[in-house]
Length: 473
Ligand code: C2E
Ligand code: MG
Ligand code: MG
Image 1 (cartoon, rainbow, N blue to C red):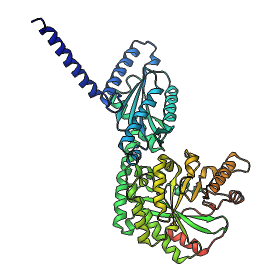
Image 2 (cartoon, rainbow, N blue to C red; image 1 turned 180 degrees about the horizontal axis):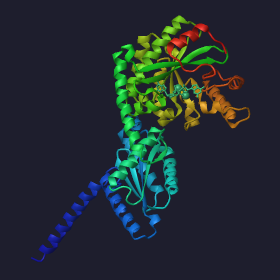
Image 3 (cartoon, rainbow, N blue to C red; image 1 turned 90 degrees about the horizontal axis):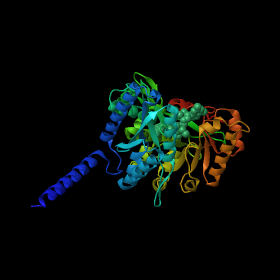
């Protein structure tokens, strides 16, 4: 039977191929083809062993460090919700390709979670080299991704761990610390990198505590016995620069934490966004602000009536029933849509332009107003701006505050005002703090101003007194 041996061999090699295939699949991500987390941990273990040995042998010990970069996308959930899974998957593949293109052949890239990638660098001699790579990765991800007609923008936060031999005993510990640093980068504003420091884990625990406390605060707000309420709305006047009188207010949330005291919105809004708690919080802000300004309109009638601006977070923006919810709020409060202005930030508006335009148009059908907040700080595509059905541009405080006579920022403010006017929008200058700034803004025909020069955000009873006194600037 001369054919039996080759047949067995063939069968054997067939089984080997199948076994290899199974093993390969188990260690790679199906979508991007990259190594998955278990395989990355394996590479990391190998690299750690190798680094220890080369250190022991004292062959160029300065080259024995390894670095891990943990990269998380900042807005993937929003993209997934608004663009759908198929396009989101295409985006992940495109991102993997862009990352790969930034690396050297010896560097190891892996997909370690839904929207998370890890990179292993070996023989790292200095942290600047890693920082430069982190910058390069970020600038690559920031560039638009084109899928047919659709243009998608995203950013990434990166956590970095530099591991000298023996600082970590297990590869999982390095990954955990890199993830912690990435969470910290997200918490401190996203689209940045953060090098891991010991003590950071405590910060992450503090953040978890903040989340628990937020849940409790929401429950207390709902149970609505006043002394338990931890959230409060403050109102900051927005002044018509033409008349010098109060035209309306921006509603700004305040959190009085029972143990920690006042917690700044910049600290808790991002946590609320990441945990979806912004949905009930945002709903409360909207209801409260509309009903309050409705009362003031009756108490202090003027023409046009007092206006209320409410900030919308990116998460609220992807909420499926947002339009219905706002319609309901308007009905319950009896407020005319024209008296409500929704503020969305420039970066929110530019994340997913086509969807934004569609949603803004549906909101505009409620007859309300739209404002683009913090303008000048994000990445705006001018070709899109004219398609946003927005009524107002809010010039970011950072430009107004540096608006000396001949400074570059004065020109930026002037340019934004001209741009807004050309797009048939009115302008609110944020952060007006001095009489000089006010005079300058008036000379540039800026319609509205908001800032400490006029009034700080205040609780409703203080605002009522202010309205009684009918101030004019
Ligand atoms: P924002 O929407 O740009 O609000 C303006 C911020 O500038 C407010 O800070 C306000 O107090 C501050 N500000 C106003 N005038 C001046 C000034 O002359 N000088 C200085 N230095 N600051 C001034 P605040 O209240 O701390 O809020 C910070 C951010 O938190 C807001 O920025 C907004 O993005 C967010 N936020 C506040 N309340 C809410 C809310 O109810 N919902 C959502 N989604 N976000 C909110
Ligand atoms: Mg705002
Ligand atoms: Mg603003």
